[in-house]
Image 1 (cartoon, helix red, strand yellow):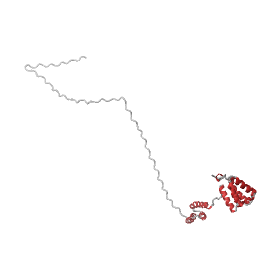
Image 2: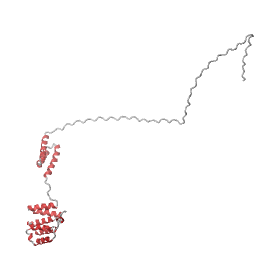
Image 3: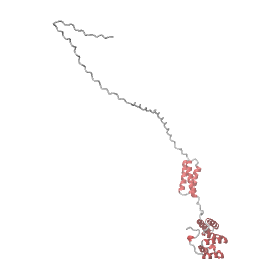
Length: 259
């Protein structure tokens, strides 16, 4: 549809003689200054998305451990009641100790045995009393005087011969030769012991062995009182002659002796 153009209306001619007054212009409004727009920083776009924060797992709160029940304090035990016989048992026990200290071992042992026999209810004294009784028994037992080595046996046999215990001397000398067959002293003493008993063949056999082991014992053969009857025999005289012709041996190197 065609738009109609509007024509401005022409002013009517004014009256003659008067000029047409110019139309009043509208007053211009003062310009209002608009505030400058604030500069807005462009948002910075990040290509990577931020990682979500790691979750922290909180531990479940633990329940406090129950407090242990307070221990009951042990009641102080009452001291043991002393029996009426305790004083008498201690007195007898101390008497036994005094005897032991004075080395009267028989008296001490008898007194301590009474503590056990007369006061059976005093158990605490029994163990100590038995200990000291064993000590007394060790002192009362005589030591073993049996000779063990050949040297001890020859010495004991010599004492036995001097005391007239010929059989004991023979036993000791035989035991010495069983341990040490080349012991010339044992052979000589055994010959003397058998000669004393009247066993001349046995005596000659051991005396000959003694001269063979140690020719120097011929001097003792010539002087030994128990061999008076044997020195008149041809056998012993022949043994002495052979021993005199034999070279003297060094006592340090003779058989049966230790260097």
